[in-house]
Structures are given as C-alpha cells and as structure tokens.
Length: 265
Image 1 (cartoon, rainbow, N blue to C red):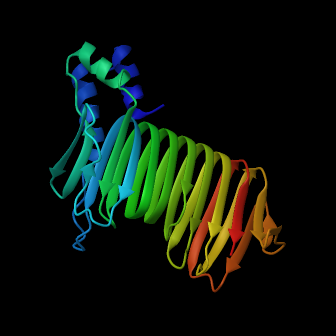
Image 2: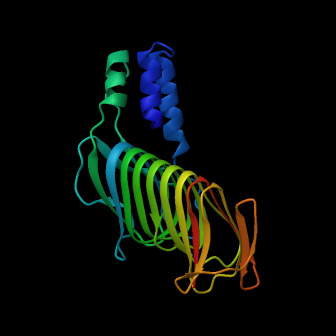
C-alpha cells in the first residue's frame, strides 16, 4: 500500500481531517524536493507521482529535463536547486481530496534527462524504467517494477514487486516482498541489499574488491563462480562469508525468507 492510499483511508475513515491530510501530502512533496547542488554541475530532479509508468531516458544532447510529450495533470518545472516533476492537486475539500488520493490515473510519463542527472523519486504505484547512465537515484516505490539500466549510486526502497539494477558502483537496496537483481562494481564503501521475503541476486563485476556476508533467515544462500556453486567461505547460522580481492568494500546481502545468490566475475 502506497502513502497516498494510506492517507486516503485515514481521511475516509474520519481518523484525520482534510487539513491534516493536506499537511501529510505537503510533507510527501517536501520529501522529494531537489537537494542542494553538489557544485559539479549535475542536474537535480525531484519526482513525485501517485500512479505512473515513468520512463527516464538519458540523452547526450540534453542540458535540462524535458517531457517527451505533455501529460495531463503532470507538471515539470524549475525549482530551487533543480527541477520538479509532480502531479497537480485536484482540490482541497474532503470529497475532492479523497478523489485526488484514490482516483489518480496510471499516467504514462516519458522524460529526457542530461547525463549524470541525480534523481529523487517517490512513486506510489507503477513502473520505473531508466535508460542511460544516471549520476544517482534515491527512490521509493510502493508497488510495481523498477528497471534501472545504469546509475553510479542507487538507494532504493520497494514495497512489493521487482527491482532490477543493470550497473552501479554503490548499492543500498531494500525490498519488502518480491525480487531484486543487481549488477555492480564494488571497490570501496559499504553496500547493502536486503529483502524481507523474496529472491535476491547480485552479480559482482570485474574490478570489484569486496568482503561480503550473505544470509537468509529461511532459505538458501549461494556463492556462484563460473556457473558453479563455489564452496568457499564460512557458513554459520545460514550465513556465508567470503572475500573477493583484498576486501576494500563491504557488501551485506540478506533475505528474511527466500534465496540469496551472489555471482562472482
């Protein structure tokens, strides 16, 4: 259940007033405002959509974000520190606000962005697809599918569904229920991939230098190399520990209920 549906149910049951619901909506909007520029010239983009099929395409010639086609009810505008893409409100009275929260259409939104764009995303329900290399992605998706082709740094939370990361250099992924698949070159820092219930597969790419711990509360744990389960590392209480290279980076992979699998180059 996404945050908009939760607010709608609280409003419909009389547990909060229309004014309180509006303040909660404003808090959601504030949570995805563009952050301060890092001074490297990268574009900052904040996205807040209730239900959408969102496509982010990196275009080399783009200097700022642009909608590939106008979408009714969706606005892209400059904001302090960057750009914002968001749903427009349809009224603040109790009936209108409830309709705004519960009756949002599943919009198809295609957005072109410059290389290296940093994205902050809140999507209640739907899909996210990115093509090309993003500088960073910090996202939340209540229910649906996210397929991220390339991103330098990714921090993503998915309530239920499928999350796929094709290439990254920093991972912080969390899933309630479903499947995570990620490929990354991890050479420094600390990284985490975690699922409450579901399958977690991580592929380490050439150049990775990482110490790892794999764990499943109830399920299987596998470390694979050359298409075979590699019988190295120390197992204890459903965990497997191993090192690739000198272990400069740290990777923790965990599933409460399900399969954990890490593939080595």
